Image 1 (tube, rainbow, N blue to C red):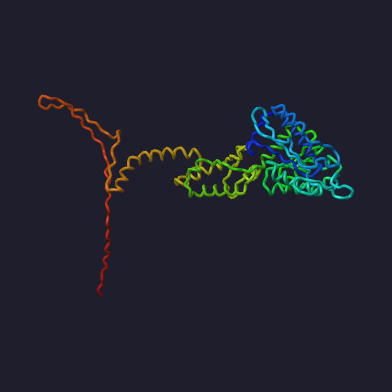
Image 2 (image 1 turned 180 degrees about the horizontal axis):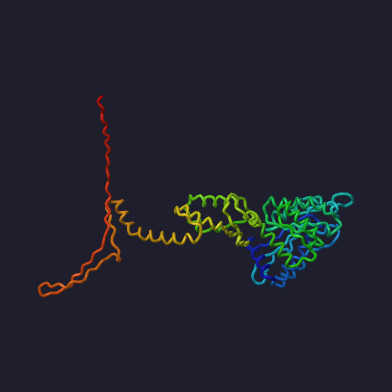
Length: 422
């Protein structure tokens, strides 16, 4: 199996705590059992290392057949117990699929007998109940209690003689239930020709209506790549836990109250507000509302396993020089203007370092001294001297020092007014 597919299973396992329990739900007669059987044959059975587990799981595969007659009569765990699966010696998880009857569509057969509702016994009631009621309760339990992720299987109507219109209400109901409980799920549109323009157009309309990924597939020919596409679409439905946004470091260095920093941060918060699922990242982070200096806002990385993402913001390059100009009062248009200004400011800074301590002393005590540097030291010619019977060398050196005194100046202005005599 391709490395890409292996990574998908790793991510799914991390998000579900290693337990991939897929509740396969939807209207009746849409190919749910067929999809489960192909999923087990392509993804699960070949990766079960224990032969006994593998044989038992194979015996528990669901039956499937064409036509209008409902084949599944109660929820079924496939396999009965979750089996340990290792994909390409890397992705370790426990897998179990849950098949359910599904919601009834009018033209299906098997829920009416002799013009009366078919009555069945279930573990959830102590009396016989209509088949369609049992199917709904079982489907609801699969959605709410037994699965970590959901998979809605519906159809365009091409797999049987039941028209597409009859599936719409049941399909809408199960999708809304999954959306209400917030469980990650995706939709499979079972089609005889999934690559046809009609199938793709229907999938696009459903995505727009339900705001959930819809993958057109033929469940009878489902392969490993098709399974990977389904799981990939489910990964995008998991909650987003963290998003790290990289902004230019020079903007980070600005003071917290700077207008540019405040504007950018406010726009980022506005763009990220309300994002809850991984699939919303691309569409919500495509732009920054209210920030006119944006050059690009790109999604750099998505870690589906941890639910985190990393994005990068770049701004108009001319903005950098504009902010420097505002801070220094010097007009800077590009690197050509910037370099000589930086050299000049560096020289001024170096000179100011000599005076900094002295000025601090003046502020504190009223007096400070600027000590000379080594370069300012002047050494006179050594002089040999004699004192009694001893000789020595006298060295003389001089250097300028600057003394700064803080004096308080007082000024008094007297205005004399003369009086004129008439």
